[in-house]
Image (cartoon, rainbow, N blue to C red; front, side, top):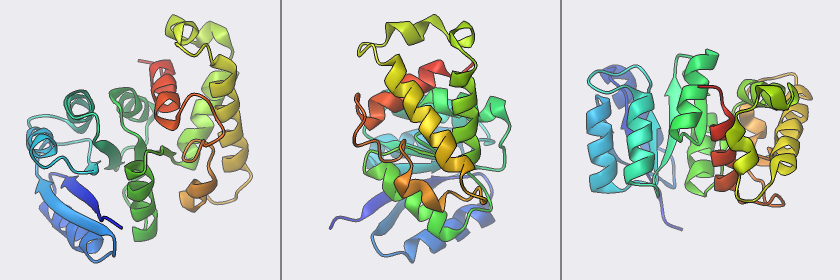
Length: 211
């Protein structure tokens, strides 16, 4: 089995190098590069074409949200997992809209981070329990709050995406812990029975997020 190739982008050297050592000790994960700012992250994504970039949000020169947007536009085969201190709605929604397919808060354990990386590398989507609930609440608020873009989805699959979001919420709220060790059974991380595909559903949800 081919190792998952990872680039780590974080402006804090101790955290960046520590995470590189931590992930480098995991079988099946190969840290191929590190970046101290968003510009370097975009460049390394293009040069190294890793499977996943683990991205901080607050970085010099180019923040993680804009770096994510450029990476997903210029090298769409590269997945982005945001790993940051911020869990406010504005940052979460901005990252998802930029194309991030994973979102974790710093402090997550090694197992959580590795699972997010491998899920995204396999084409899945990892929204933590708290974000899953927010997505479901957004959809549950009704069509008045949804952008017109939702009605223009090529698959005409508003009910499908809404069902996915609702199921995420029931999965998340059914657990007493917000740690996403349940991600492998999350309908967004593994939406094998849903149509459209995982990535298309992720894009659909991203377009639905408030600006």
